[in-house]
Image 1: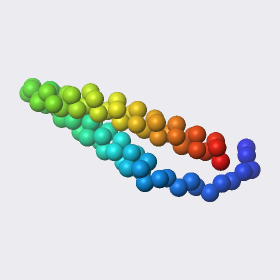
Image 2: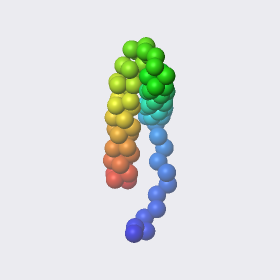
Image 3: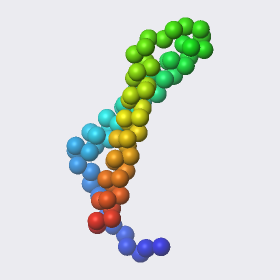
Length: 79
């Protein structure tokens, strides 16, 4: 265990916006996926846009969050 303690690093405004965009994209994709599943279970046909939103936005948000984690790790290793 390391005895080196450092103060929390500040996050730039652009990375905060990037992180919030990733969270919003994931939330919207999950809502679209839930709408698709519920409408399929009810026997209806959902709007195809919901399928596209969930197929594109969820992996994109996952990659964006992964990039944010990798950036945090590299900043932490440098200090």
